[in-house]
Image (cartoon, rainbow, N blue to C red; front, top):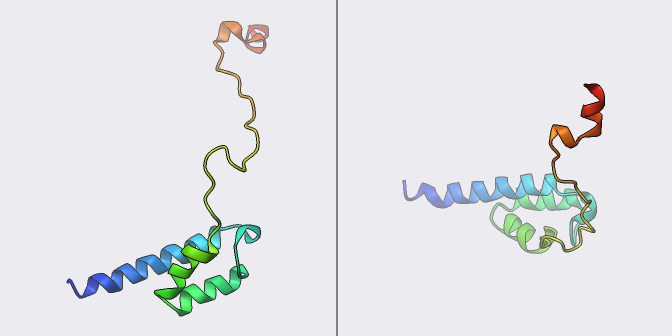
Length: 89
């Protein structure tokens, strides 16, 4: 069982990297085209996923950084404060 653990970890890392690469928008992928990253991850099972996570994956932005202004949302209103609801009565 213990001999199987490194192999399972490599497969899990490869699957995670392939799925992450496929779901990443083409314009946000760094250093190589998306198709080449997928091939790299699949052809080199340990080196490819690590390279994707370090050099290909877009950097994570912190909340509020690079996302633009948030749309203003109104707090929920009760039925007696909603004019559309009152008109339908």
